[in-house]
Image 1: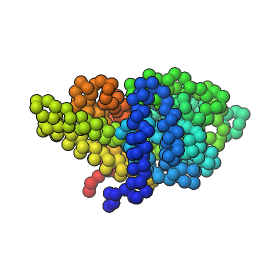
Image 2: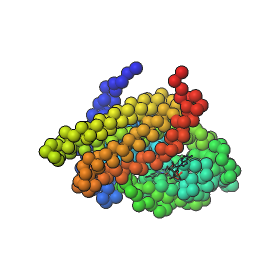
Image 3: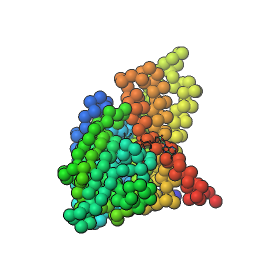
Image 4: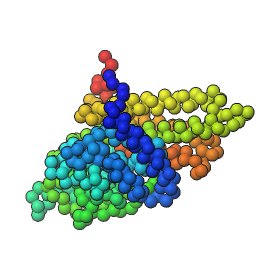
Length: 391
Ligand SMILES: Cc1cc2nc3c(=O)[nH]c(=O)nc-3n(C[C@H](O)[C@H](O)[C@H](O)COP(=O)(O)OP(=O)(O)OC[C@H]3O[C@@H](n4cnc5c(N)ncnc54)[C@H](O)[C@@H]3O)c2cc1C
């Protein structure tokens, strides 16, 4: 068992740590206040080669894998979860293409994401279908004029990066609309420029401002056969992309928790009450210690999950390990940012400090890409079915 990062990954971690400190940190609050998309950070990530980190070298990426992207996101999320989300979006929509897509799709869509000349977004959720994905109503019917082609109609919502994206990985029912069977759903690559594709309402969010979430409207969009990801009815294969995402989302939680605890620790070492610093109180020290334990436990779970995903271990039997990382790290982010607010007292509640922003940003992490309850269900299923067993 090896706990050290390879020299290449350790180097990547140091490089991103510096970049995040120098470029992301000074911009974090402004992005939150204005809600404007931080194109300067996108450019900085592009110049540093971070947009293609987990895209294979054969398709113009860095080939650092899920673990490489996880490490980078952890560093960036210490300062800004919006910037971390920008990096996450290099994997969420491209994952199904990398796992199940055709060679032609990989050549066509992946290098542009790695180079930063195209952006992508991921459309699974619908107003009535979040956790319950099989409740989706977006439909794809065979195109009468183009053999193998499809016509898509429906509404996707809460889509991160919907406005900036050039293409979307979109899921639609190709089988019986009332069916709840996985083989009734197919994944497609849909280009923004195609007739019938438009961005609807964008949301006013509690946190992670600067990268919009919003609606993607599909009105009789004609999608050619070559833009089906995997097979028709191949939802299960495409969904493996989401399993492999768990450590990447977890990294947003870990980085946020680390940033919050370090900030609060610096503060309590300075702040005085009752003739000593706040850090001198044992009650405060124990809170810091418990949070530090949580952070290291989350890192171990997450790095292992990333290594599993990089080894292609994201099928059903590995799901509990992947879900644990996401569950633990994102719940930790909420606890750690809450602790940071508490340790700063009134100052932590005010905009002069980043703590209140971290607290708002953290909460989305327990909701996106499978809520905490969904992850607990998957972990429990793993135990009940013996995938996670210690004998
Ligand atoms: C900021 C943000 C960005 C997002 N970005 C994207 C994106 O890019 N692409 C995309 O497709 N979607 C995106 N989403 C949507 C996200 O994936 C969904 O919000 C999530 O899947 C939960 O669905 P829901 O909101 O409909 O909640 P619901 O499914 O309605 O759940 C509501 C509550 O019920 C609980 N619950 C549901 N089912 C069960 C169950 N079986 N057992 C126990 N509890 C249950 C949930 O855990 C939750 O607490 C985003 C959401 C947010 C907030």
